Image 1 (tube, helix red, strand yellow):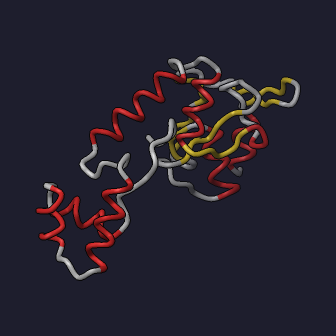
Image 2: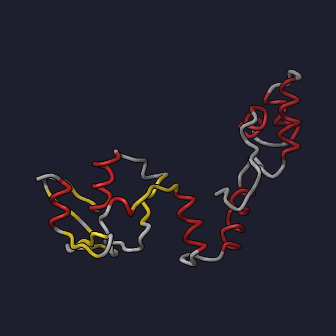
Length: 164
């Protein structure tokens, strides 16, 4: 018996969806078998069909709205930031203004001062003129790693609502 047959035997059709009849956690179906492993049936089907994905950066999102759905065509991969944005738009999280303020607060806490492109540009110019990283750090009154990021051009990133 394949994974597809195993899951199909434990689902009931409802329109286009295949709804999981077994146990659930937070509304999502759960499998715990020796043969097929442990996890959500939709995730196991996705991995069997499309291969593994980076769970730290990507999330499987359901387009039909049913957490019990095991129809793999109703699931798609999205970046975590896109999922969070959708949740704010659907009012499943706080307001968009709140996430904008949180993004600004987090960006301004960073030591590389992403909101000041002038300093980063001046640091790159000093590096091109032959100044060392220690001299650049002393000139701006910042740490050596910050000066190194500025001089390398890897620190400046404009602050937007979705820079989290």
